[in-house]
Image (spheres, rainbow, N blue to C red):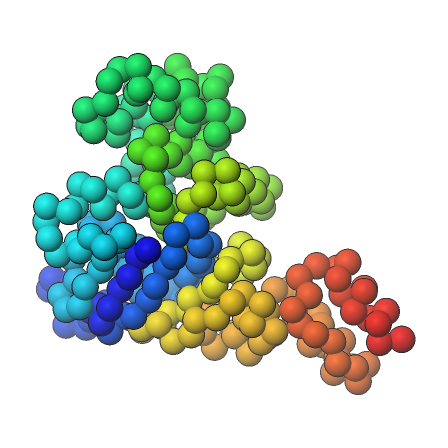
Length: 274
């Protein structure tokens, strides 16, 4: 379990706290989406989760390990993998397999175990045929998969993904999200997803909304969907379907539950009204 208790953080040279009194719990195997407008503190929060940043006040603990104890940081970073928005900023080596092997090598694992982890991670992201490829020849989606494979080779319990879809087209977004959800089930890991897109978050167990460095709302995804277009002031764009439902209700004088997430469920809801 990841726990943040009374966590605040201010960047050096800044007068304004990036995070203020954050209290948040993320459980094992849970899928949590963290949303909010630009500058709300989402990315700062991700860096606190694996010890890249340390809180000024309060405490972050991962499975009982406090990041304030510097002796815990290596273990914390093994347990919490962090994916940045730009994959090129994380790629260091000349070959795909070298990139994936880097983390396990730093753990001092036996070469046979390193090879097993590399092969397993490549298979998980369906990139077995790219082991000898230079990363710079890969597409944006393939680079994201490579970065994810590098994290999986460390066998994390929590995978933190900071805007992983920002460089992908709609098809690439859909494919990568499906991969992440599959990995969550097969590997029993927790997903912490930073995203602006509500469509990416509707399968989350809980959605955390941030604004101005604070957590202003936490609820199951169904509750967010039920709120329809009222989430817009939080910097979250409602689903196109929610906007359509709101217009339909107004013009037709009917009341449709707004937790419907696709056209099929909308048709069923309308049929129940007839």
